[in-house]
Structures are given as C-alpha cells and as structure tokens.
Length: 359
Image (cartoon, rainbow, N blue to C red):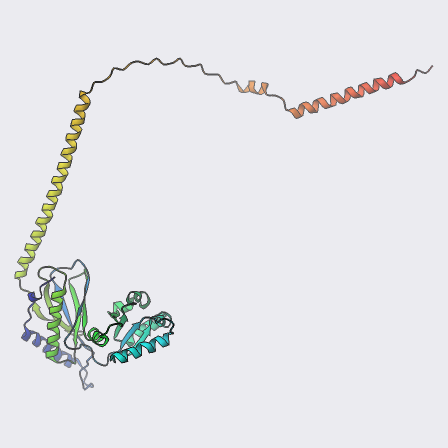
C-alpha cells in the first residue's frame, strides 16, 4: 500500500487554484442566467509515476456532497418472488421511504429493464434522463449485458448498493455524495469528480484534500505513487495543485536497479542450475560408456541357415484355361438331347419289329 503521508498538499495553493477556476466558470456563464451553472463539474486529474500492473476502482467518501439536489437518480432492483414489475416497484418505493431515502427519482426492476428498455432508443433515453445510476448488489453482475456500452463509455455505470443493509440511508448517501476513481493498467492518468461549481471554495478544498488522502492510501503500488495533481472543469484548462519532489526519481531509479539486480540474480541461478544438470548428464554418459567397455563381449557363433525350398512355379494362364472344368449346365445341356435321341431310337426299333409283313 502507498503511504498517504507521501502526498502533502499546500492548502493555500489549492484554495487559490479553486478560486481561479470558479472565477473562470463565472466568466463563462451566460449573461442571461442569474446564477452560476451548478451542473459544471470540478474534477481532479491524477498523474502517476508508473502504470499500475492491475486495474483498480477506488471509492472516495467526501465530506461535502458533490451532487446537487436536482440530480435525477435511478435505482435498479431485484425481482421479488411472486410479484409483478409494478408490485416490485411499489415494494422498494415503500422500503426507501421507511428507511428515510428521498432522493431516488426512479426505480426499475430487473424484469422491466429486460423488457421495456430492450430497444436501443429506450436505453439512450434512460441514459440522458438520469445523472446517476445505482444497482442492487445482487443483480450488479447481470446489468452490463442489458445496459450496453454507452453507459460505460459515458462513465455512468451503476454503483452497487446493499438494499438489505440496516443503515440503508447512510450507505446510499455515501455512494451518492461520494465519488470513485478508476485506475487502469493502460495509462498513468486517471480522473475523479470531486465538486461542482455551486460549492464554496472551502468546501471544494476540503473535498480535494479528502480525495488525495484516500487515493494515496488505497493505491496498490509500492513506493512513490502520485507525480502530479491538477484540477479542471469540463471547459477549462488544468490547474496544478501538487507536484511531486524530484527526490522520488532517485527512489525510483534505486527500485529499478534493485529489480534489475534481482532479475540478473535469478537468471544467474537459472544458468547455474542448467550447467549443473548438463554436467550431471555428461558424467552419467561417461560412466555408462566405461561400463560398456569393461563388459566382456561374447563371441559370435555362426548359425547354419536352412536350405531354402525351391519356389513353386505358378502355372501359366494358358494351362489354367485348358484345365478349367467345363460348366455343369453345358454338360447337362449336351447330355439331354443324346438321351432323348437314344430313347427315340429304341422306340422306333420296337415299332418296326411289331409291324407285320405284308405278302
């Protein structure tokens, strides 16, 4: 864990930067509007010394709420058994009133989200109508496939809330008025919203200090972490409020040298182990060769090979054709007329003998 004491802010410098940013936002407001546009967000931009190896999401509680009372908040709830979508909506509306939660403007059960908000246009309309989305932690993992990529591209993904908590109002208020910082492993910069233009300079300064302490304490990185911190709005330039001491460079270089030495030592150990295994193999092969040479080689005794039998000559095709027996049907066919002729001859001779001679 990073040490929170490693990032020390100059409160006077932070307050000057906040006042300069608020003056800029006042000049940018239109002449027709009587009040400052409170929808203008004030964000903090963190620049880290190195890219983290693992992505991380940090919840940051703030002493002063950074959302106005006019923000529309939507809550996705679980489907209650043996209840329709309307009955589930009324059930959770009554539960929130009993717990003292009054800033939830819309409640959408999971079944209604799958059916009523399935078309693309319905999802885009829901995304534009609400400023913040909350979700029951029991269905949080099911929402990405039904919401679509636009909720996550515009950084309006639902924040999980435990609706079964005994201190539900306090937990929801912390989530709504707090903020979150998403640290990715694809770059060294990350941003978090900490205030809005309608807050005083002291409130914005206190929120910035609380956010810096939380981020420095929860970042999963060893050694010096934060390099630069800026504050900015949606239309302004970035104003620096913290710059890390260059002494951190020596610490980082020492860490790099230590890592390089560790890698070199590991490589040397690996090579030494490899050389030992090769030497052991060579000694084993040498011993095997010596043992083979020491063994007596038996004399080879010639074995009499038996006389080969003469190969039988296959009869030629012509002889096979000559010796081939005639078909039985043909023999029967030839014998049948002979028998008939013989019988006919015998009958004729008998008839001739019986005929008397005519004088």
